[in-house]
Image (cartoon, rainbow, N blue to C red; front, side, top):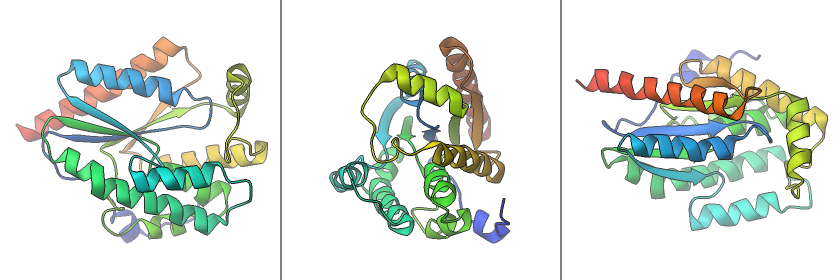
Length: 231
């Protein structure tokens, strides 16, 4: 892992809205991220929170147009261009939706992918470099990070097996080969090493119910810790 300057890492912070939470879910294809995210939403709603789930890229009219352009592309996109497109969608989503919603106490915004996907996909798998990705995000509002990121970790073999079972059409990124996926996993590991307090690693090789329980426990601990701070 390349050395990242401390002042660059210190640029990143969670948004300061008492009583609200900003979360993200991460994982390679087949990790079960989308399904577990739905159960997390239900768990948090049962705790009395208002929960909004958004996806990246997307979540706004502008972002959805970028999403379509990226994922349906038949031609290779330059890695720096990819990173800037994701940053553009992310900044718009933060300004137009995320920050406004978090300003309402008792709200939880969950993003299906965020900064760590860009570290893994563009920084590592596309060889742009983690430092370059972080430099692109060091200014407001892109320097805002979740209070907790749930990273569901699975192996390349498990990813392949689950994708075969799903048998769904592959998009721009899903159609990449094994070397790309190996680098993705390495990129997520690097992100977790850089932000160990924020990123919670979940063993996605476990059964569905076990993964669900791991995530619920992490979310419960986050809620309790924030309540203690706000007392």
